[in-house]
Image (cartoon, rainbow, N blue to C red; front, side, top):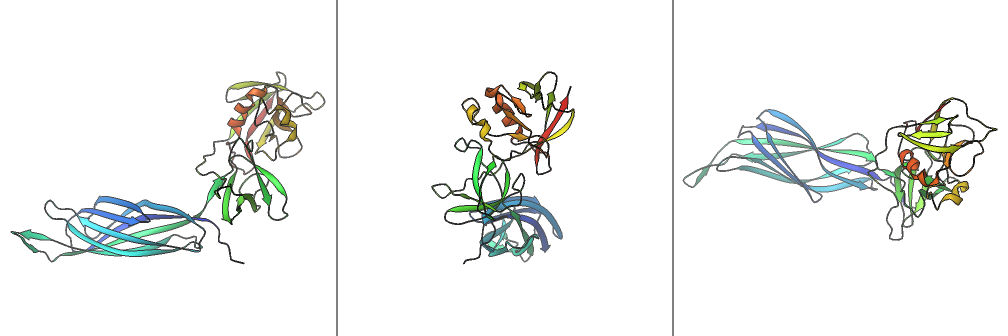
Length: 330
């Protein structure tokens, strides 16, 4: 069986420009072409000095153990009449299994050019060291929030082949893929650190999202006497259960754990009604929408549940389990 390598993100950046040898001027331009991308840097650099640049040139994702790319570098010292130009070509080979930054140094020699009445002369030669740096990181993705899955993605737990669901915007680390499935590891929530997989889309593309930004911890208040939930300045009517009243205090609101069938009857008004947020890290008490309660905080304004869902689903407390905090008051 062919060995599988984890999907990695490779960032290539221009790290440093070092100016050695003879001084031919200080108005320096560096042009770099790699992987179809073009970077141009204009800097005032004096001979005998080095300048930190730290500007990204390219970023790719790969599941190969090594990554190879050809590169072209041109250094120009700009003059009013004649530019002094030098160039080189080479390649970078990055080991994606190495966590530490990998550096690649290229030398470009630039000879001074002068001309009088059509005659060219100049003996000075400047030596430039162009340092590139490759940084390897894991590829982060997020569970989609599409309407077809109603905010959930079905996955297979690879350790026992059971089928579970992951909630929208859950942060995951991409591992690898084959012809039919993509494999990844949730980094938060109920199935944190388990290897799971999901079917690829019909065209073979990934289900997962990139570029999602989680929000700061959400803070909500529940009034026992008024039977209201307050979140982001909005007040929602709720119903409680007289045989299981809430105690005043501060509770965590968890990342959703699984789709709750009890919300199915309300999906016409609240498409995300099966998404319940557990309150506290033990027991079976949740924040959800519906018409009755058996001890949960049940928001009876079902058409407004999407407001609460949107406020909580991307929020994070930073403990890998919670989206926010609920304070229960009189």
